[in-house]
Length: 301
Ligand code: SF4
Image (cartoon, rainbow, N blue to C red; front, side, top):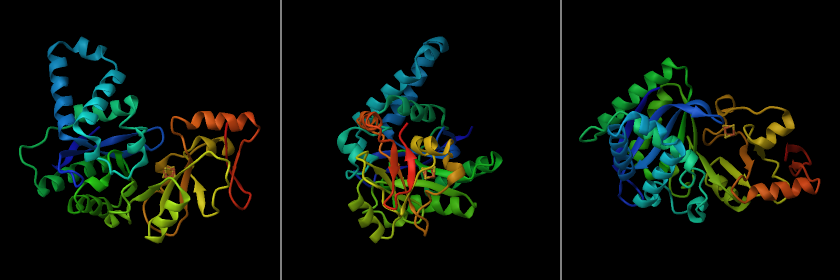
């Protein structure tokens, strides 16, 4: 596994110092990809410093601290440093405190592990450092036959200056790799349109983003309303798997790659309050997610 910082500099949102880190790896949904995360410099430094002090107290003690505890620590550090420096103010998950990464200890623990195992930062960051780090990670991707970059495991590419994210995306494309990428900051980041999906939650937002040239990834409410005919269900979703008997990983699907002619993609919303809404529908015998043509797209199970 290769893990390297690929940028260090000020947030576009509030000027706080950030670190962007790339790692070869993935999760059950994405399968193996190059994953990019954006973290605050304060959380980066504190996480790496605590690893050293834990290690000095003895490896056995360090190993005995659960990933969840380390994730809780990282979650607190990110909150203290200010989530607003890595995420756009318009994100509803940021506003509601229900983000599945920054508000979730389990997922935060994966980002904390990435920070701990990364190569260190050089004393001064230049664009040449980004170029060299990207060459390293692209060589690793090639050796491991990885074909996609996932942006972001934590944070939003909208926080990164356009010239930096532009260089990274250009190098990904030149190497013949694809992106699996999402931004909640689509209203303010037209430079991400060809590589990123607009993350939206309502049909009104979807239409606004589409009119601005974006393809969209929609978290649909579990309210029983038919999905629009031009919206396909994400094949990694539980509801798709319940209908088809199996799911696909993002690396098999590869549809979330920015503007183009293929349909938007969506999932049934899976926030903290959605489990009970889905269960209530199942209890009423209302299992199907259908579109406006009456076609069944997925099943609540
Ligand atoms: S639509 Fe495809 S690429 Fe997008 S999240 Fe779902 S499985 Fe991944």
